[in-house]
Amino acid sequence: MKNSQFRFLLYTAVAIAIGLAANLPAVDADEMKLTSAGPIAFGPEGLLLVSDPMDATIYAVETGDTQGSTEGVKIDFKDVRAKVASMIGAKSEDVRINDLAINPINGRPYLSVTRGSGEKEISVILTIDPKTNSIAEFDFADKKFTKTKLPNAAESKQGRRGNQRMQAITDMAFVDGQIYVAGLSNEEFASNLRAISYPFSESNTGASIEIYHGAHGKFETRSPIRTFAALTIDDEVNLLAAYTCTPLVRIPVGQLKPESKVKGTTIAELGNRNNPLDMVVYNKDGTDYALMANSARGVMKIDLTNAGGQTPITTRVGGGGVAGVPYETIKELTGVMQLDGLGKTHAVVLVRDEDGSEHLKTIELP
Image 1 (cartoon, rainbow, N blue to C red):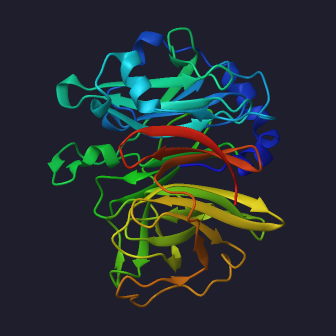
Image 2 (cartoon, one colour):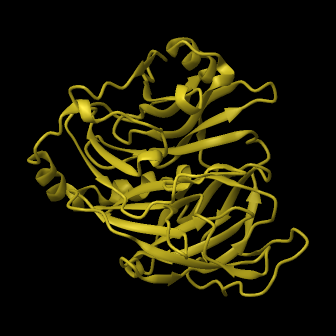
């Protein structure tokens, strides 16, 4: 999914790459029609990454949203899903907010949204003005964009958990001129992680990822990364990746070569029967932390002080137990479905109440 602090540190390093991107020919806007709305993420200079998992395509869109500041921005938007539904002419229960991304320049929230399902499904990207709390559909018509297609994405076929093609792209992040993409491939080792250079030339088959799953007591290669964020350890960029049921894994990006097989280092087992939803990495008082939202185990604040030196988990952690790097559950944060960083000290969260209503609000990073 996201790492606002890390992106800020690396914007200067990618300025040349963005300059090159500005000279790329514009693609006919009529070609940008989403068949599905998956993860979204920001790069520098207002560059928005939009994924279409069913089409196995990633778009890099020059939004032009490059003015303003995050200073003093506070998001407090009630009943966001109901208001989105009203805007697009749908029932609230037929609308799904798939992802949230905050423009690091000005704090403007962007939402990846789906209405309906099957042949009637419509996918859109929406924006919210943090000053007026007004919603608008992001108009691609006059925007310059480029795209890349994943060559070996998971096949489109229905399973007991839906169409596995929707897991072709489960999370994305822009780090130091590279777009990292997690998801499922059609390979035997289906768990896949790609490093795609930007500006786009062509995509690649990515690396197959093997991890040890503590709750299951075995090595696995077929479960996708659900969410990840970038973390620098000893001057080396790593991806901190979370999987269902819930191993936390460290993967150095230098190992992500196309067609390679990479074994991640499991640094925590955070409990079974749980799905990680979203994650940011941040620094507070000189210590690195991850803040991770989960489907069944609340919001975890994970201490990453020893993320590089943690003894790898290679034996079973049974009974729903936990092991590895320490964490605490932030009890006052409940129902968090999505989150993204807002500056260095805050985040925006999408919260679902017990009655099913959903709200966007700003929190201070704990």
